[in-house]
Image (tube, rainbow, N blue to C red; front, side):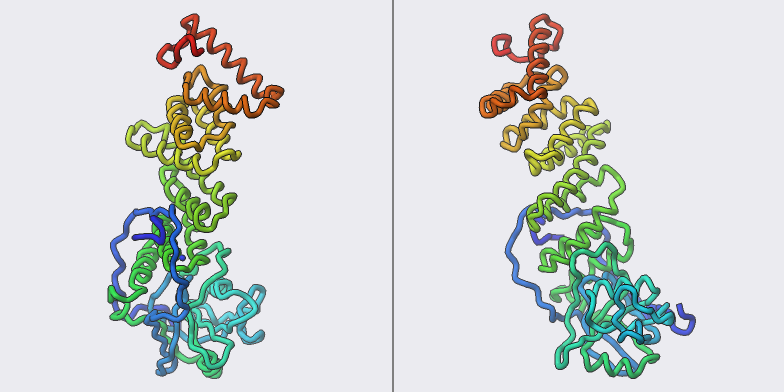
Length: 407
């Protein structure tokens, strides 16, 4: 998947699939990057989703929602979501118990579309139809707010106000929601990729890399609110430290696209913790890859508590070779925070002397003379003096040291 950037039951009416559904693309573990922001046109809310809706043998116009991940053909009895309050289906509504296993009919207004869908999904509906509340308009694609914390895995479609009012009068009729498979299997259709990515996700809703790919597609397509939901959910599903690429990519999204450094730092921190776990493995290739990602992560949070915490963890875990190489690489990128140099100086005996890092320490000392009164800096200098003495006495491995005159 090419991302926007290098990285938007009731027994009398059961859910069924009368025909074999289109096959999704083969699953892949590819995790897209969201590293660079690019300009894209705003998406259109009116698009050919090939939505098909049949109500009491009458074909009606509809549009599939952006946020729901299911295009599955669904047949059932039409049931008003909450007739007592105009079918608003918002939080606290008196749900019609007959929605279980059937197709729930809801009206637009009073709360976000995504919330209505989540409420009715939780109540047991097999699918949701939302009627517009504006006259003389065509159905449009529905989106969420970007703050949702769960997936909608049942079909959700929109119909016009006129069709909604007609359906309210026919409550209890038979309804089938589906898609025009011939159109959706056309690679020229702008929603072909969305169709296949959602089909892939439906094979395993717990696969974070599938959510990542769908989130990257939504970002590229301009559906930023929906992209945010899919990406944050992907990060929440990560269980293995070796999957650090996923929280890292989510951090890229918030850092480069949403420009929310605080939220991004949370995901970078999670990625760093995963990479640190991998650094303790025996595989050289895995260690090298993890160190590269760790350096990328730390370089994006300079002069922040997260950088100091990650550097300190490397020290605590005894990863001194990795720490030295990481610090020097950050120095060369000009992404090294002073707090990280403090950690190096405090562990100078284990990490070793470095001309590059000493330059940073010297510069910080000159620029911030007041820090001479800081007990941390006093400790740093005491450690440095002790190291020099031990080096001169031959108690420190000379391969880690510098020229005796420099020391």
